[in-house]
Image (cartoon, rainbow, N blue to C red; front, side):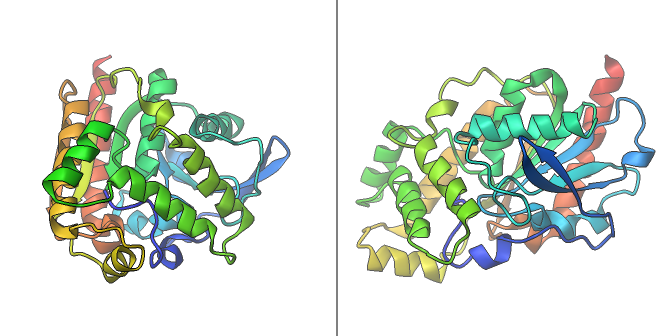
Length: 313
């Protein structure tokens, strides 16, 4: 449940699309704005097979997933792309909400004539994005894989409970906005990245993930949730806590928040067949960088469960 991006992680996750394999980077224009993307395996895709769609974390491009692909079977197809304003995709001022992000992704898939069903993979804040897509276009989605997703379901009451139990002065919902505002003070970030950060500030002001509070129950599709649990406290967190006088007891604070995140995602999939929450103690927020083979295996297993579900229809 770490913040969608931190001071020290910008360089790691922000980048263009790079593969160990060699699919060609291409561009498509939607609403007069250029989007960069890469497709793999589409030429061998069979009818009604799930198509992988990757959604990255805040400020990061499709290259965030590049180290996964050498571990995926050659007969699986999919797409990575850079959202508007990220890497080589042009900023589009008309995209003001997460719903606009989802609509643009839907338009991208339609424009490229990539038919559903889709298996979405979302990292960090990309987790809420793919959940929103599954709510907006439920008939198109065959499965979901969450990689250390942001807990958009955290309530005000839960946040206050964690603060009180851990004798901390700052809640996660407060820190989420503090971190976004801190990023905006960095004059070196691109205009497109600024647009993403401003959009997420708007999405959680004054209510945390305000457009996610009344999502319908998730359709009965296979879901895998990978959660980095009992993480090490990073130096930047300690420094931020001290310099901003946040008064957070970091170890106990994160434990309580992660326990709530586990509960929220477990509740989300409680009626879903072939679904699971996988806890990964001592892993980092970038699970797919730390152990790409493990994440690729989880994607492949979810893909196979999607195929099994689709075959029954």
